[in-house]
Image (cartoon, rainbow, N blue to C red):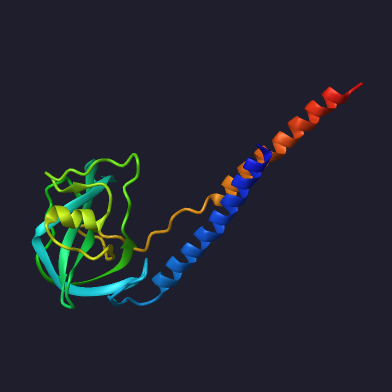
Length: 206
């Protein structure tokens, strides 16, 4: 058990270093100006893309409540499909919208955003609803198959000022709580050693 607890603590320290590297990568990407969408963009790269939105190909992602002037409204991220000037199509998360009946803009547009790699559905992920075009895993392959279009293997998360849809303001930053987790596991290991020493002292006492 002691080996397991120490191993878990070391694993969390390694995760902390990995997460900090990811946060540094995001910070560097955010500090850079947007670049034209390359053929194989890196994760979290800030990019600019130009194309034409397909008004008939829209969907929703997730479920999220927002506090408004009137009340708390449930909504989701509005997803649109953009046919790129350079060729191909890409899934674009345009921002939060209330309800489930919103439609993305159609026609030519230029937007800035960042690259988000495809998600994999977890064991407890909600099931996608193809009837209402509501998805709970941001996987362009699955969403594209449901919409009948081949999409790039990533999503572009639009960045911009407040509006409707309400886009992201900055790149996402996942929390880095792994040091606390490591400290917890190491603390358990210390407690286990103390309990063992107390037990051994009582057992070996003449």
